[in-house]
Length: 109
Image (cartoon, rainbow, N blue to C red; front, side, top):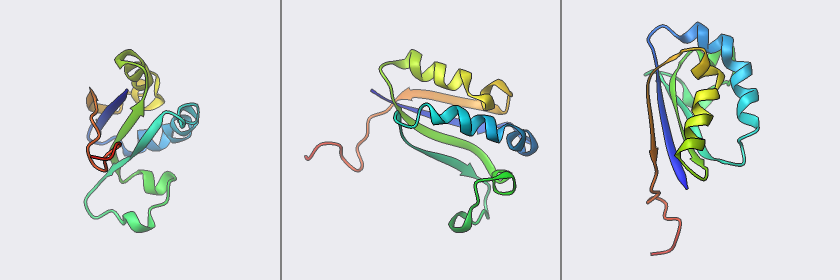
């Protein structure tokens, strides 16, 4: 089942995000087969065409959106709860909801 996770950083979390970047990236490696898609929300004016995923670029990230393919809500919530970014307290807002993919369609209509 697909679950969308949308997370928005608290203001002023750029340096904390940099500090936790390596641990966050390492944590996600074990879930790559279950992450349908995902990426960062970025500050206005961020050059997304030339973005470098590292300490400099990550300072422009203000949150993220992930879609996970997991068996149930508890698994999606556990993924979020154990992420080093979550444990580091950088998020001000989190939404975890079942996700119905409509575009592009999963099945021909």
